[in-house]
Every structure is written in C-alpha cells, then in structure tokens.
Image (cartoon, rainbow, N blue to C red):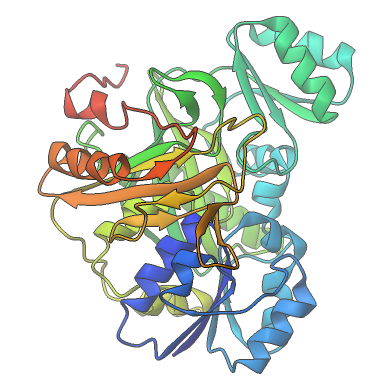
Length: 415
C-alpha cells in the first residue's frame, strides 16, 4: 500500500511511526512533514490546506490511501478532493468535519441525537454573552465557535475575562461547567461501523496543577487505571452510535476519526466536545500501545469495510508523553532556537525545522515530546521524563506532573 500522510505536527509524526511499522505499507509520503517524519517518509512541500494541491499530489504519487491529520485541511475539504480522484481518504468530508469546525453545529447534532452534554447558548454580542454567563454561573466556559488550534476555550472564575474572550472571538458558545475528570476517546469509523481505541487523558493547561492558560495539550497518558468499568461501552452506546446515526440521517455521514472529549460527572459521562481527527498529544500514547497494523485499520475505515476488520490488539503496559514547549508558549512562542538531544527513539517532533547547515531548530509553540512505554504507568512516566531531560532548548518549559495523579491514585470519578 502507498500511503500519503497530510500534516506536519506531533500527531502526524506519531501517525507516521505507526504507518511505517505496518508491513503492508510499501511507500510512505508526507506533506509537508517535519524533520522527524523525514526519517520515516519521503517529504513533499505541499500546502496541506489546499484541497486541489493535496489531491494532485495523491494522484502523482499513486497513493492507495491518504491519511489527513490536522483539522484545518478536513474543514477545507481535502478529503472530498482526494475522494473525487477515486483515492481512499481517511478523514471526514468538509460537511461532516463541521462537528469540529463549529461548536454550534456540534451542539445541534448532540441535541438531535440525544447525546448527554452541557447546556449551552451560542452568543454573538456582549449582551447575550453576559446573559448566558449569568445563567450558568462560575466557573465560566466560553468557546470560540470555530477552529482555534486547541486554544479557543477559556474556563475561568473571572467574568470579565470570560467576556473579553467572547469579544475577541466574535461568535462563541457559552456552556455550563462540567465537573469531573476528563477523558479523550478516539473512535475509528467508516460512518456505520465504529471501533473505539484506548481512552486517554491529556493536560490542557500550560502549568503544573492545571494552572495558566489553555494550550494545545502539554502531555497525555493511556490507559486510564481509574476509568469506570464499562465506560467505553457506555460512550459508544449513548454518544458515538447516536451521533453517527444522526449524521447519516442528515446525508452527511461521518467517516474517519471521531474524537469524543468527555467529562465524567456525577451524572455520568458528558460530552465536552467533538473533534474530527486524532487528538494531539493523545495520539502519541494511544498509537504507542496499538499492536494492530495502523494502515490496514485506517484503510478499512476509508473504504467502508470496517465491519469486517479483526478486533483491535493492544500491547500490555502504559504510555506517557510529555510536551516540550518553546519560550513564551502559548501566548507568543519564540522560534528559531537550536535543539540538541532530540535524535533518539521516543522523541516526537511537533514544531521543528532543519536549518541550511542541518541544525535542528524550533519552529512552533509545542516543539517536541518525549513518548515512552513501560510495564506500568509509573515506569512509562519515568521513561518519558528521562527522554525530556536530555533535550536542550533555550527557554523551553514542560509540565512536571503529567500522569502523576493517576500514578498516585489521586483521581476520583464523582458518584
């Protein structure tokens, strides 16, 4: 199988590792890729958000499967353009990707499908925003209605800060706060059949103890030793299958990766958000534990044959990833700094580039992540932090508490 991977971040490097490890993959091409991906694939300089350019490249390289990593190309219609060329694409259509592209649309689907989620109002002016904030009370939850690279959500006790974020965004969804530990569940689907992957937990806030502003994610781990038995079955029954059925009913079936972000509340699991692609950095840990060949799984979803796919196989143990962020991230990350110590197994590139002299430089806010597995969560955590300690990047920072609460048994699901 010849596979074209679209994107160039940490998620795509993790996908590239999985795809390159699949014996059925005879050629892996990535566009635009990154220095880490370049060690695994032929890298092509193509604008990932240009549907016609990606489709033309898929034809040129005779791809059997195109795997679209980031959300922006999906919302732009890259999967549609590829499929129009008769090539299998893993990723939803632009219409179906509205589940991530518009928080309002996602809420409409959840309401129609009877999916348990937070009460919410869409607001476009200061007056309606203020009313919604007062109705739900603190902590205030304000979400940019459109794509915001994982940084469009503000959760705060400060009403003025909530109003300011709404004004900056223009169109927002104001929600009631959902109290309880968060879970990320990835579901591979062809629009009808659906296979859940291992649940994971990520860390959105920039600082230890969940302090500071939201980011695109500062680390993750899987599996979740504290998750209630039957959680995945419950979410598949009450969230995933009703959502897929509603999308089919509307004539816009969702095929690809449905990311279900959940809060485990006293009233049961509630959906925080849907995404239309693999999450970053949870992909790094989930795929590190997946034993089933990745390309075959994604090809089955892309070709409508997922119901015939064998059950998924998982490696024993646990996985942890720790993100190394650039100085100034998430507000105004500094780029162009030299990175050393990154040429080791387990280091996944998220925001890097090569200088003309071959030096590895920072090129984004989240620069690298150390991803490790171990026989248990504590061992995986120690190994991930050992990887991160050997990376040198001026001014960089990382959280020191990724997976600590889970290792120490400090996470409780509300009764």
